[in-house]
Image (tube, rainbow over all chains, first blue to last red; front, side, top):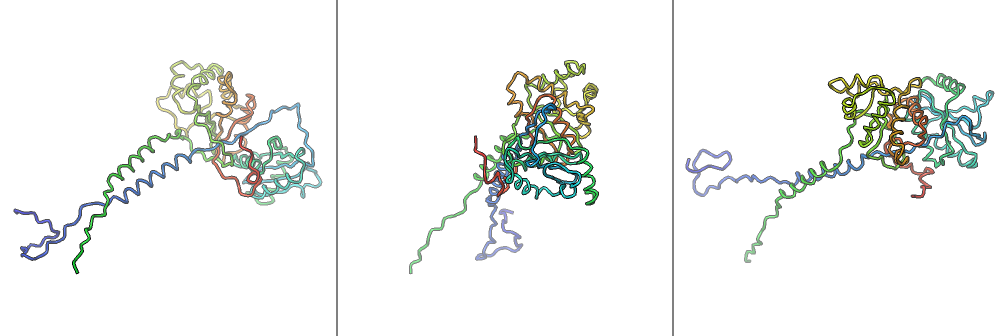
Length: 183
Length: 216
């Protein structure tokens, strides 16, 4: 009782002279991993708080002046229609009743970029006009994506416009959706 | 051979101080960085290549997945004026005490005829239960809200207002709701506003990538 036996699992027998004392276990904790953790958390906060800033896209709306109907050359016009289920339809110039089946094409967002660029390269910049029409069942994402495509393909503002869809076009889209299976 | 004993010194460094510094820096970053405005409504915006940052103080019109529209008046200096303007314009008959209470709410998401009754409730209606500001073509109350906002900002620099007007829509929100919001702006002679999007890099090889616009 006079002395504290610090050896682990101290034996009950008396230690004789010459017997080595059991090793004292160190109580020091190595703090290196804690520091690593601390710095990891710091870098996490540094990066996430600066990168969470959302960006804003500018929108320019034309004046709804019914007296001034914009004249667009048929040769330079491309109409892009946005439908249900991320579907994109397009045609060049004006829709002609007898040539509908070959004029009205459907595609996806991935392919529309090449088509837009192709049209842009083939047309005089003064005649170039992309007419964008959105269906009632297209989403907000579709509308923003197509405007983004205009920026990506470097179409100058003033050469694309958002317009209401005509009844004929709506009918065409419905028919195409039925033919391809409602998506 | 004489035993040359190389005096061995301990190579362990006491890491306590380093740990203190690390946690001090951590606390600094957690507290010093701005808290994002409370996002009561979860909206997943689409992504765009636009690189302009969204302003901190903004008048944000949020369009949720199911087509409900909410307004968050971020500019505290003009908030009271906008609310009292619409109170007078639409004859809501709100008392000054009710107006003060309304000012405290973070966002507006009720049709105008429900505002007075909602202010008499003890607790606030959660965002998910609010029906949102009506934007159907038959009754587009957004037009009235934008009118009040543009009235209050009438004297100031219009470009500042254009930078502050933000529309944040969910990816899955249907187009007609967005179209009605655009109508609300057009009817009030506002032709420029901004859409909140997530940033995305310019696609490699595209026209914009090959000919970046000159920085002005």
